[in-house]
Length: 304
Image 1 (tube, rainbow, N blue to C red):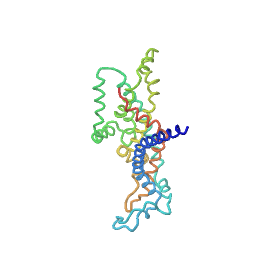
Image 2: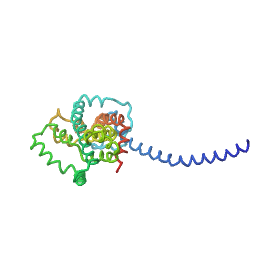
Image 3: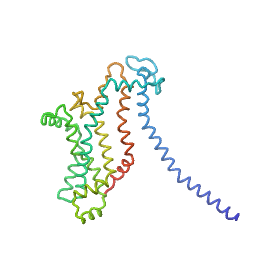
Image 4: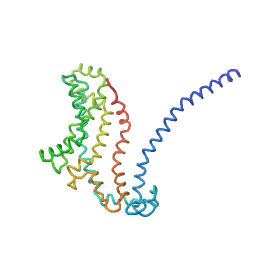
């Protein structure tokens, strides 16, 4: 009995050493991830703490010709909510947020749906010219937006008469985007052919397969593209500035925040309060769809 116990002790010691050796790479990885997570959080904490500050309490010392020459205060006592109150009291933040959402809804859902249709066609259907057409469409991603900005403005404002309306922000986005189509196509490339064959044996056509089988099974990648598209359209500044910037009641949240005056002493706390308020929808959306977002990012890497 004693021999068995003494023989088991060295084996347990060896297992413990091996376990420690296996844990070391994981510990190093977590330390690196935590380090970069802290680096990412610093700007957010900086903006958050600034939003609760009095404007004249930002710096240690007095300004010299408008430039503060002493160190920046990270925390202020007492902290205040006056910046958030002034933001909603002096600026049409709620109206700008409503406009942003109204301009986003149609191009967000309809645009992702049309991109999914194109992606399914390029991934699963076989028709002449499919590959050259796909790469021609994909090559438009390489074209910078500033190149098409002036022709698009002339076409929408002069040709279609859409000046001072949100239609240029809504209608084009409803036709989808090449990048969204490409990422959804990456998922459809790994779609099981057996499901399609079984559906065809039951008499289902391509449209039925797409609506009743492909779309429900591709919800993670679709939700991922909805989140990415929402972030891009919600944070857009140049488009709304061109088409609705001269009409105060049509301005988006980004234009409302940009209208905060910076003459004299710049109201950094008020500006940071606006930035925090603008971040809230993005945080809520990502928090609710985090599982689908992570899964969708992984699935878009699947290839044939």
